[in-house]
Length: 402
Image 1: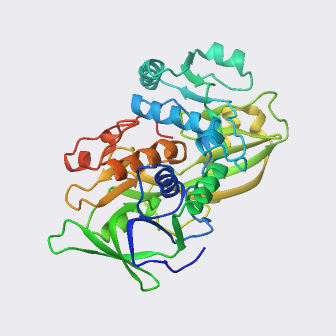
Image 2 (image 1 turned 180 degrees about the vertical axis):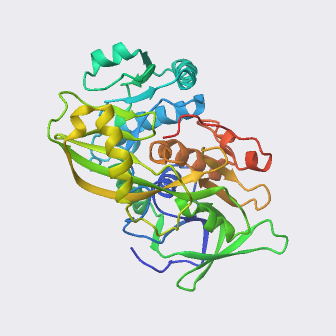
């Protein structure tokens, strides 16, 4: 990937080339009605520190809002039909979803009521969510300890693992082949016009000043830093999330759903007698953008005891790998922030996905590409996610955040 841009002007500069930036770039390149020039500026060309690389790579339809359900339904359709979506390019592999499902476990009636209400939303949108009593859970998944559980919620249709890294790779590859320009560089400043309502140019770390028609903030956990260059505030901050892959001495005899324990610890099937689990500390502050250090005490004192209690076969396990990553956490309402700024009209947001960005990337990239091309969303009405709700102080709450 080159460090230097080929031109001094682009119709669109995308700040961040990970899953959201590349999804938007690909959908623009796939739209015959868009004929503009696109520059994607990525500060981490190996994507080693981005949220896309640290993801669980799973999708679910168990959300509390119908719009989020439909967003995931499009993701499932895209993954299962990726070659067709990508022009029947024979180089693109056929993909599928490993449907082990998500299992939400409620240990009190308040949370059980949330699951019941959410199931009605999901069923109305066409999802296959089932509620399960503790006895039903135990019968279907004998390895769980359900002594403290009052209700479970699971959907094994289009819920589970998918190969997000392959989708990401092909979005980047096809977009570049179609003329989207990727550079390994960093946007360090933005210049507005005299009225302060338009970004006229961005300055790169290497010194070039690039004039632009629009700017898309797709910089993940660094969203607030990017917005600040335009004099804009956005309520997104990096929150640390830890992941572990472990091998069980006595593997389970069937697939483990992505289980969300009432404590917030989650664990899922990984294959070959291995499992992937995630969690975070009870104190959950914003962290530095480059802070990926592990806190081993969280595993010893919090995560492992919870795993061994919920699934007694996980008493004897061995960690194979571990890492720290960042959620791009929207502290306002835990939902995506999209659309244009209300004053700086050519500054567009694609931020704040709070842990469910990978599974939302097909619909959000498509919607943002439509907004850039037509000035409106066409496939799904994504206006509830627009930045203006923050100005109006009208949260669009998503209750199902892991």
